[in-house]
Amino acid sequence: MNAPSTTSAAYTDHSPGDAKTTENVRIVERFLDALQVQDLDTLEALAADDLVWENVGSPKFKGRSRVMRAIRACEGRLFIEVCIHRIAGAGDTVLVERTDAIVIGRLRMQFWACAVFELRGGRITLWRDYFDYLAFARAALRGLLGVALPSIRRSF
Image (tube, rainbow, N blue to C red; front, side, top):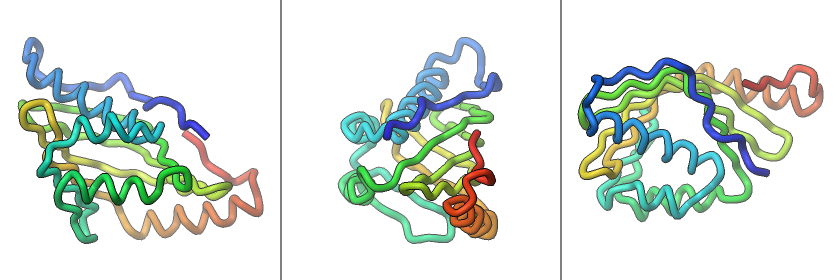
């Protein structure tokens, strides 16, 4: 199952003429696209050796090899779809407001998330996701109900 490419809303905020900011926004968009289609080579190429991935409130993954090991553990079993609502960049920092869907077989859990990415030399050094764990629990419950009652499944 291939996820659709990242859906991006028309709202992108960065300084006009700031080539570095524009490139960093594009790198984050490519990263999220690669995450959806499980293009692990692109994910790894866009990640710095010292990448830190954090879902706030959960343990951090430190180092590109550990992050990639965690992502590879889900390959082919868990899929992520991303709908970007807003993306804003300033220098080496990119903020993304989005809706994510985690799909495992017929189970689909869709929830809001916000992330900050920090980049250095064209590679991502920090990927910090923020989301509401209660909203995630509701998404899981709705997803489980959606397995039995497909008419209540959400999609972007």
